[in-house]
Length: 123
Image (tube, rainbow, N blue to C red; front, side, top):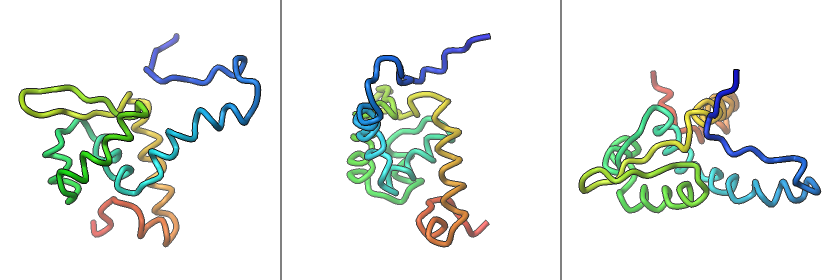
């Protein structure tokens, strides 16, 4: 049984080298390399949210949230849907939510990762 998860996979046959694969992945990984962006992705892994909701939940300013959503949107990691006078953001596909949560869990396993992780550790 095949299911389209909406994930763009690399076609290995069309790539000549690992260098080409790296060239394709680097911009997306760069977009993910910021802790504020990962924080926003973790919030979006829980469900679609408006910029206002992301602002309230993250503690970031509206300007900062919008600034960090831009590279995520440009790299196709999040989608935006206009709703009334606001925009609602979502992960590009549900298949991205699991890896984002896994990365946050792995980061929390080390003292450095726990300090950088955006999850609430007081619970």
